[in-house]
Amino acid sequence: MNDCTTVTTSDIELERQAYRKKQSIRSVLTSIASSLIFVGLVAFGLSNSPGWPRVQESFFSAEYFAQAWPQVLDGLMLNLRVLVVAVIGVAVLGGALALIRITTSAVMFPLRVVARFYTTVMRGIPMLVVLYLIGFGIPGLGLFGRVDPAILGTVAVVMSYSAYIAEVLRAGFQDVHPSQRASARSLGLTSGQTMRLVIIPQALRKIAPALMNDFISMQKDVGLISTLGAVDAVRAAQIAVAKTYNFTPYVVASILFILLSVPFILLNDWYTAKLRSRERTGGLV
Image 1 (cartoon, rainbow, N blue to C red):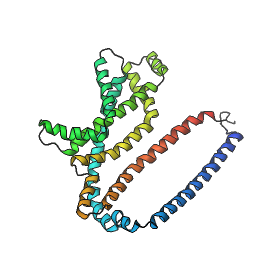
Image 2 (image 1 turned 120 degrees about the vertical axis):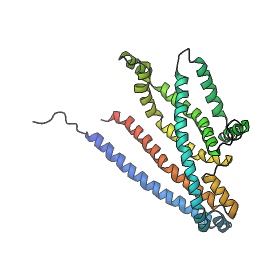
Image 3 (image 1 turned 180 degrees about the horizontal axis):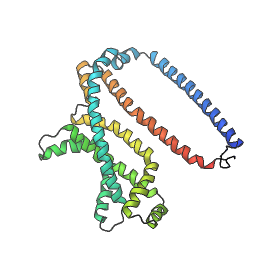
Image 4 (image 1 turned 45 degrees about the horizontal axis):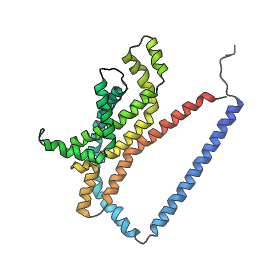
């Protein structure tokens, strides 16, 4: 007996899929060709520049690259530790600020005012200024004795980025249609259960690309803790440059930060494309 529930793809949809595949292959080949031409033109322009040999020796020396690699890589480990702690701190503080901002309880009014003031002020202050205020202001109080610059830098990163993350989360929470909340409450869910089981999961799917972009940006800004004296990848590169008067260690630090960021950039692009593809699946014929 034949199964009447078998789903078949129409000829029109098959033609569309074949056309999309053909266009995709053509786009990839065109992108590869244009990229090779661009790289060739840049290489030709650099190699024929009068000052290229001197720049090559100052920034792309294989000898100094090998010398600086271990020290800069060891400094990158500090960046990774700070990044892990900062991500946790930003998630907790940013999430708390976002929840406070969207609450409508009269009792929470003072906290809403404080949260709004905090997010407004912290988003207006440059990251470097926040680092100076925290890194030099807290030790100046003399309350905690000598504090590790890495700890002060982590606090500054958390304070700065939690304001951005809080606004992204708040926008995501408020973007969920009110009917979702009303339906959940009509099923007997409490306000807390509605937020945890209905609102937050839907909001996170929508704002995931924006959160990943902020995370990638935070990866780079973690390197600013070197301004407080922490020996991270950037500071290790500065020390190597001061010893050799060659700028290749900065290139080493740049390469390491790129290698750290690329996987998350590719993940962000993949997830964004997946969301777009999911939105388009509703119109198949």
